[in-house]
Each structure stands twice: as C-alpha cells, then as structure tokens.
Image 1 (tube, one colour):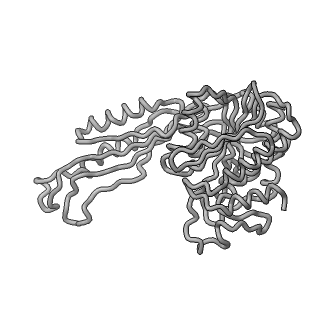
Image 2 (cartoon, helix red, strand yellow; image 1 turned 90 degrees about the vertical axis):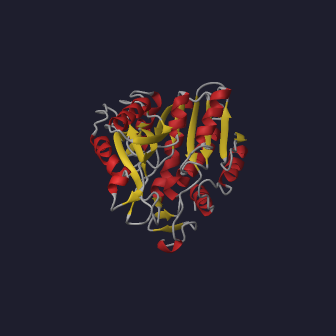
Image 3 (cartoon, rainbow, N blue to C red; image 1 turned 45 degrees about the vertical axis):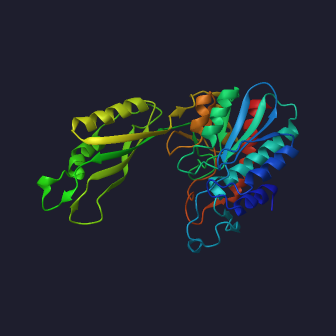
Length: 377
C-alpha cells in the first residue's frame, strides 16, 4: 500500500469517537516534527488539539481537520468491522474513511512533500487538528483554540478545511461559506391537571400551537446571491407525564435557525421572542449560537486558487456552495482568514459502511500540495 493509504488505515484503526483522539494526533505530530514542523499540543478538557507550523514571517495557510469520528453504531450492521479498514471494490471502508481521516492523511502527506520541495517557502504552512468536531458542544476544540489564537495575535490568512465537500467526483463542489446556526431551548409553562377537567388546567401544548404555526410560516429573509433564505425548524417537542389522562404542566421545544448573512442572530432572537410574547405565553427561551455565517469573497485569492486546482488537477469546474451544515471553519473565519472547504465525496459520511474511493484519496494530496505551491511556493 502507499504511504497515504497506510496512514489513513492507521488512523481508522484508532477508535477516536468524540472527544477521544486515541493517539491520532500524536502519530501525526511525530511525522510532522520529523519534517521540520514546530508542534504544539493544545489540550482543553477532554479534547486534544494539535497546532503544527513550518516557516516564518508572511501570510499563513492553515489546513484544518478533525481526528474524531461519529459512533459506528452496531458493528454487526457493517459488512466488515468499522474500525478495521478494508479495501473492497476500489474503496477503503471504515469509520472516518471519508469524514475525515482520509483528508487528514492527505493533508499530512501534502505538507510533508511541500516543505521537502520548498524548504525556504514564503510565509507559514500549518495544520490544525481537533478531536471535538463531531460532538454536540464544540466547546474545547477549534472554538477554544481560536480564542487562544485571538489573544496571542496569531495571523491566519487562508484556511483549507478538509471536510468531504464533493458530491459525485473529487472537486466537483467546494464550500466557500456556511450558514450560521442559532439554536434555542423553549419552555412553555402551563398548569397540570386532569384531562376531564380542562377548565382547571392550562394546556401548554394548546397554548403553543398558534405560536408554532406562526413561527413555521414566517419568512425570515429572502437570502441573497450567496445564501438561500433562512430556515426555521423544530427538532424536538416534548410534553406530558407519561399518563394519557394528565394535561402536562410544561412543554419543551428544541428550535434551530440556519441563517444567512441576510439576517443576524440578534434580529432572529428578537423576532422570535416578539412572536411568543404576542401569543401571551408563559415562556422561557435559552439561546445557543454555535456559529455565525461566513463567506469567502468572490475573487478571493484562496477561492480562486482552489477553483483553479480543481479545474486543472481534478478535471472539473467546481460548484461553489454555501450549503450543508456547519464546520469548524466558522471559528477560523472571524480571525480574518479566507476559508474554503475541499475534500472527498460525502455520499457515505456518518453512514454504515462509510467508504472513500481510493482513486480520489490518492489524488487528494496533489490538490492540497498545489494549493500550498500557488500561495506560498
């Protein structure tokens, strides 16, 4: 097997389910140190973060990835054990093959080859890894590292995120921005009672229903040339005591906005709270902003470089998208960096029998290296 395939397989064998790193970053740190990188381990809580740099003054190009993976679910559901990499029908199978241990391995190989060929390159190249990308909170991963970078004045100019962005073939889609994510836990209080005596109770489900209808029907914005309109969704609605003859005393709803640069988190919060107040509810709403929207500008140097690399080396003109969920790029963009996501096909991510085409995986380091050479070579 090639060095790339060997490294990817070694990473897959490590059961690094969030927030565990299971030694992935130590393995990578050792390789990059041998290649001349300065290595810094930034552990926060239960989360491992790795910051490796090569070079000196000038612009910084950072590759961003994560070594953690989502749980595999029952191993019996997989054709082969999820943490035992297997090559079958031209694909590498295993949890994290596509999301995103394959990309991480490709970044490592690209950086090793780039600094070996260009020991006196301009600026800095860097690798930032976390073991807390797939978790629900993302408190001690790149979010915490970005706060530390802000305090110590780290300069980040360009950031390539290795998330699996492609749809059908390598490089056919790059992400040039992401929507923001604003979540809330809404509690609507009523009065518990017997269902046969509703006049002695106050049903929070009934009280909330008209407000929910208005929230779901509201057109929050029209989006813009780069983003679709903001969406509102209820992901969970819970009430009741478990008994069929009891009116519940409270309702809890989990809500989420995926919003564009056409809106702000402050505006969405104010409009939501105005709707709830208008319906006369007894309510409490706890908000959580997990990331603001960001957009790499059209014509930006990184965006145009990645487009050209996909066109020339992958043979495809990439679609430039801001769709999908969130990524750790949302913590790097506020530092002033231009952020673009480029990675393998995402058809099997988070699924049983996750896999990546070996042909795509073998081509990925050349794309990442070409980006280094065009920006810093």
